[in-house]
Image (tube, rainbow, N blue to C red; front, side, top):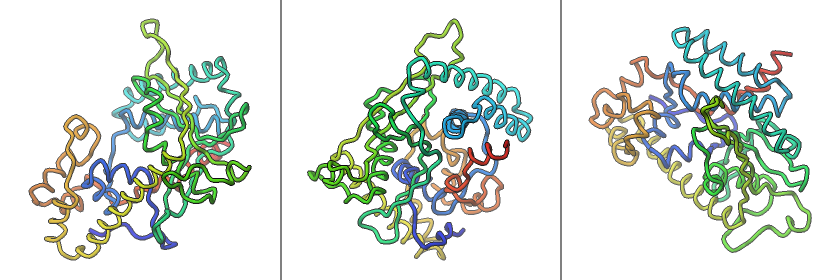
Length: 345
């Protein structure tokens, strides 16, 4: 097994998703981000896939002016063609997603959100050098960046679907949202945030604007039937202070240093199966959370147990047919919404 190849420009890019997976389970980081093993035939069902399709439809609408219901029809038609045995379940998901999206647009117009947030960029990939590291970038794909038409302030917009609403404070504390703000800070060219430093002086004097926060728009996963109870949608603005940005940068730097050390140790041991086996059981041991692992992690379906006892786990990844070796960052270069809208003319 060989690690993923280095990027053409020689710089290592680390995303928030990679950082989160390292913090959540280092064994899964090893298989996905170091070796690049991804499920060969992932299910098209589930909460994550449902949310991603709604996300895509709303990006297409607000970023490119496309009909979000048409986008959902196209996406689900393709999935039904690939997974004919799951057509009924996919059709049920399509019906629910269209009800949710159609209701969201009506609600946003009624609440004034439709005109108060002006989208200026969609599917924007941002890469910035990570302070304190040579040849390492912090990387993110921001779904939509926009401007509040009333205040003139810029922020990013993220769409979420869920059975319940997330309270505003939890949104503000989200590591993903904090990293979005940090990346925007670093992209302006201002000095990196430091504890006790406060906001950059040029910012207060009309320099490059900081994007210190954003908006999470949540759609509740219900059909809005007579039996269901509103509210069905929620609009949560949040703001990050300079001290939060300083804390976020310190945390990112610590995690990236751990990732770089793991890559170095693995690179040195790559020709010795015995050493690699020792590393994956010790330095990169799993973090098992019963109710989370069973539904969210492909390794829980057999590979994790094989790696625990060292029995044929290499062969499982290489020759079982359950995994393919690919690039976990492929989604950053797809331009999925733009391609879909462009193909439709």
